[in-house]
Length: 98
Image 1 (tube, one colour):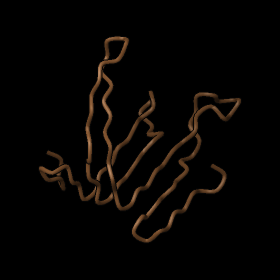
Image 2 (image 1 turned 90 degrees about the horizontal axis):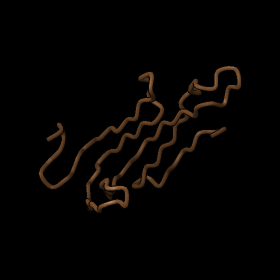
Image 3 (image 1 turned 90 degrees about the vertical axis):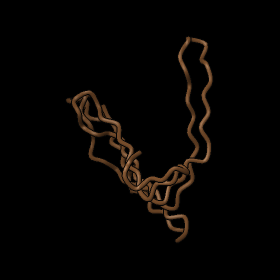
Image 4 (image 1 turned 45 degrees about the horizontal axis):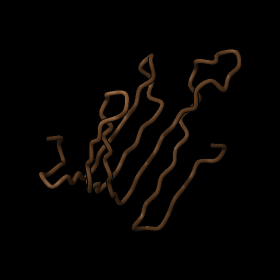
């Protein structure tokens, strides 16, 4: 079980990242006071398995880097754009230019 988790699906903090082919992170989510509320699985038509995880959280931070916006270097990632949403405080701060 990951550090900061308990047996009820609660995590004080949780980070999820997705690296691009060269190892650069293009998508990152950081959640605080996250709870897994539902997990389902179903068979897909191609024989694979689709898993769905539903969560609730108090605060979420999302970093995302677009790819392919530079015509001279179409495989490069742009700088990370950050978003955050604090539900208890009722505040969100989307980045400009996203």
